[in-house]
Image 1 (tube, helix red, strand yellow):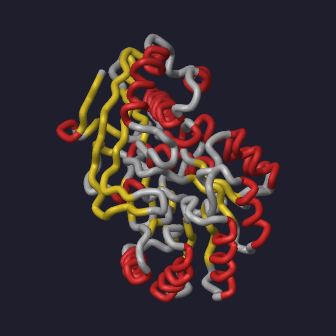
Image 2 (image 1 turned 90 degrees about the horizontal axis):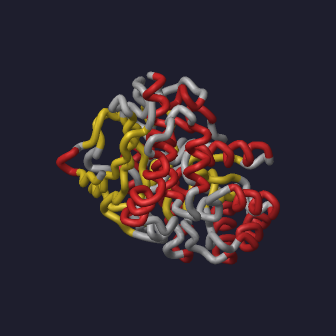
Length: 365
């Protein structure tokens, strides 16, 4: 049975709350859903989120890559030969990680559907529940404290606070969040490359001296500044998580070689899908680095794939998979849902997605 058709669906879905970081502010998820269809009419879905400021990927660019290159590569090919198909996708183009991730995940989803098992079972796991943190969008200390109390009331026990927009005020922001939620909630910070190395050390040492009990700090400095990342890691006690600094294996090897970070954040849209993500997790683990699986602002498609990966492989820190929680409505039928701070995977074949919310999605063959 071969792949008979490849479709792309452009999605623009509103958020219920604006999402603000040191890199951007957005009120929508702009993403491309890729659908692979076999000769029996079964569909596998994957997703390429648009994140100009992080990956450089756009919906238009991902759609062009899939329609002009990756799709034609797969038509008439056997989707059950999963490793070969994913390898071909990775080798077909330079860059274009988001487009590759969408096709890679769609291949995995289709393979699992053809076997009649959830994607997590295909990946080697059984659990259908994956804990996640929730992000507090960047803001002033008062707004962050109010958001922290609300997210605590929603049942989240791990808060990721967006900082990096104003180094001089970041210590007060963290202090306000800690005072709002008390000692029973874990707090992690994400500077999204917003600090210089000296600012990072100054802020993090201030947090340590104040006893604010921060779990980790994500990507404190510019992604290209591995020397600066290592310099910060050497001078603070709080663990440092590399995110934008690591897209693929070569990036992770360099972080390991320089001892630039304590953990790595693996994201499907950065590395190109489930196939390379598993390599990154195994490489990090083999070298003693902690692991987190995260996401861009994406829908239930991408979050379902990432949560399936976590369910099968595990991570050393709670996953960062709240992106679809921010959506005002889902662009797909079925798929994952949130139960408080837990991503619940459907006990259904593949990602458990039965179709798209067609009235809200632009479809192209």
